[in-house]
Length: 473
Figure: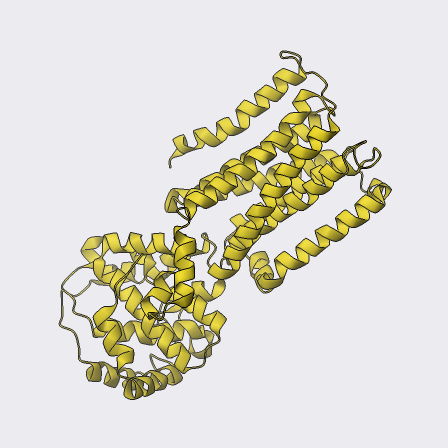
């Protein structure tokens, strides 16, 4: 998606804005349509659709361990909750005229835009890391706060007079902040879409475009005029766009079926591959097109690492992070030239430096896609060594994330027991001896001991994986 790809989003802003100006300036008939009942139904439609999006996205965010998805859920919870208040407080419908409707409408777009902007930030941003610590509580707590605001606002509408959001200069300030949030979100999602081409991202861009025009109309429009009605339809369009994006991203019901299948299957390979998010699957496919060995390697490493993690009594939530991070741990190799990646002979120092950048390149890709810090730690640090001589950051000992230490053992084990163009596979016992020699220099001693213990007790831990591991979508 080059700059020509921005034509659609640009038109999504320009066309409705020009229509609004044509109405406002009198080039088109800008009649008065004072229809409280119609207003209520239109607003309710936006609120209901937004809540459907929020629930679907919120559930997916927790299941897929993706903080960006949780932020998207919070964006549309904000739009749904506050726009519901805007509709219920329609003048002369359920209650008398007050300042609550315009203030609720302004807050709905402002807060929806804020969470949309947060969803566009990289996963290693300090604010995102802070909020990630309470990911499980974000949606319920935020929902409760919105409900309380609605109850208090409907009971005592005069209380919002203390927040003059419908008067300048605060009205203009809120508008500028909202426009800035959306502009930044559009820019970041555009950059990400150029790499990943995920359908949901382009629909988020269009939603943000319509948020921008809706906010402008709120500031410049006059109550009940046709031009004022436009922003309600734009918000409705933004929610419909998000629903379409979710459907396209998840290929209809395919991912739901696979997720349910993953919950009940006893096949460890299906448990991993069927529960992967679309973004992770896209990255795996991208590596597979470059190097078929890499894709099989990623899956085998994941299965080895999961067994090793269970032997170490790693918590279930971290097992999910391990699966997501391990299966794309080498995704940075997408940017390594084929001549280096598949070179049969010894690498030059320059070629070695190039390939040693793949953890950083993979990290940079995945941090823009919403991967959380546990997964990012695996991608960046799986080549660090216990004695601090690894790469790319020369981390040492306990400073290396535990999941990365687990993947390091699984990674080396699979790499050496697999045939490559430049050497034959080592035997299981030869690799075990190398791992044992590398304790407390290359590897965490606890991880090596746990792997040896597991393989001695249960040979199937390595034999079945090496024979049967194939990616299945």
